[in-house]
Every structure is written in C-alpha cells, then in structure tokens.
Length: 267
Image (cartoon, rainbow, N blue to C red; front, side, top):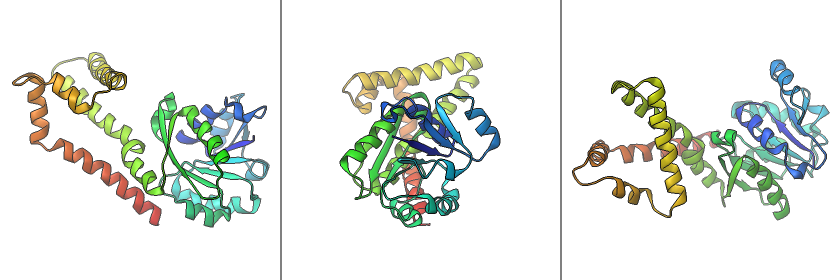
C-alpha cells in the first residue's frame, strides 16, 4: 500500500513517523509532502520517508492519503489535489472542524475518513477518534484504524458529532492538563521549591495518579475519597476547588472547545 501524508507539521509528521514502520506499507516507504524547503531538507535526511515537494509526483499513485494541513489552508489544497485524484483513493483528514461532506465536495471523491488526533501521539500515547463516509468499506476502515493505532490507540465513533465532542475532551484536552500542571508548578515555586524540584513534584504526581487510575477499576471520584480524609489537607484543597466551582469551569471549557469545533465545521 502506498501511503501519503500531506503536511509535515506537528500532527502530520507525528503520524508519518508512526505509520512508517507499519507492515501495511509492505515494501513501500511512506510518502510525505510539504512545501517548506527547510522542512523538506530535514525530512530527506530520514531514510524511512520518500519526500516530495510537488503533489503531481506523489498524489496520483497514492492509495491512502492523510491530510494534515491547517483547516484554513484546506480549500486551496483541495483545489490543487482534485485534478490528480482517482475514485479508489481513500482520504483521511487530521484537520479539526472540516466535515466529511465538505471534503467530499471539494475533492469530488467519496471515500473519506475524518479523525480527531491529539498531541500525545508524539510519544505513542495518542488517542484518535474517527468516523467514516458510507462509501468506506469495513476492510478499508480496518486498514485506516491499524495505521492510526501506530501512534497510540483509536476510538471509532458513529457520527461526526462525536468527532467534534472528542475535540473538547481528547483533542484539546492535553492543554487542560498542561494548564493544571502550570498552575501547580507556579504554586510549588511560590512555596520555595526550585524549578527542578517543582517539575519533579508535579510531573511525577500526574504520572503516578494516571498509573493508579489505569491499573485499577476505580473512578476518579473514589480515588479522591481514598485520599481526602475528613478535616485533612487534601479535603481542604478539594473544598477550595468546590467552593470556586472548578469542576463546572473545566466542563465549560470542554464544551467551549466542542462548540468551536462545530462552529468551524459550518464555515
């Protein structure tokens, strides 16, 4: 199978690096296209890729095409792609807010899969939700899923509404975690810890909490109850968050990202 990634930004390159070793590629190298001369020069030093700077050299013969450009660049890209396509090609979008129908209309092709990736894919811990057009077969969808899983795990969802919803949870979610981490780092520094010790305290606390959650069938609410003794220090912190409505603010933030994803899809 000949796989092409269009766009070598953070997401495009992350998925390209993951998929490059997939057995689905057989004897073919993963193809990657970009227009930035410096990026192209860097990519050509990586032996797992065939690197291209013109679409007509790589797009017409590709079997499966991952589109990983910024959404506002998509229409110009689609116009350039359209004359080079054939009906058997499968197109997988890594773009936020661009609907399957919009991609089909602009490309004049029906086989489209829409995904929502997230940043931890860079370290093999990504989660990618995906859904497909009716024209995608079960076998084709399985191939796409196997490729997506090279960067972590994937979740099939029934409708594009869930793609937009997962934008609010997993797509934008790492930023919420980093926001919380930054707040804790600043608190540690104010308490007098060094930069190094603050980072160790915060990063290991997050890592340990996640590991506990993953290794046990216990809800976060139950873990809080285990840690927060009545009248103790942890309960004081939880009470402060409850008094300041932190839970609702986090939920509001997730819905804000969800609503924005829906809004982008209507443009």
